[in-house]
Length: 102
Image (tube, rainbow, N blue to C red; front, side, top):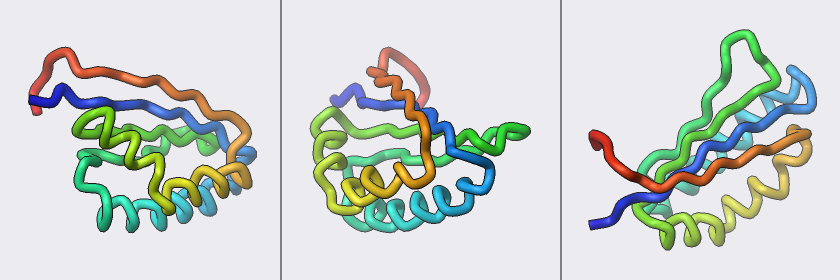
């Protein structure tokens, strides 16, 4: 049984106005994830109330191999290249499952 592999990504946007463009880029990326990534269990973009320059992703994959496959997808590579228009800082925390309710 797979233990899962996840990450939390904190994006600091260049300014509050970058939010709409960034969110649109994420929505287009999600189309590819939904269609082509069986191993991606959760991929969610969150805004933070009162902090318009912040976006937080929660990503959960079936296993490390599913994450590695996600990284190679053309829609993911496009996102990684285009996000720089909107983002001034990216902080990533990788996580491995210990216990919980799924």
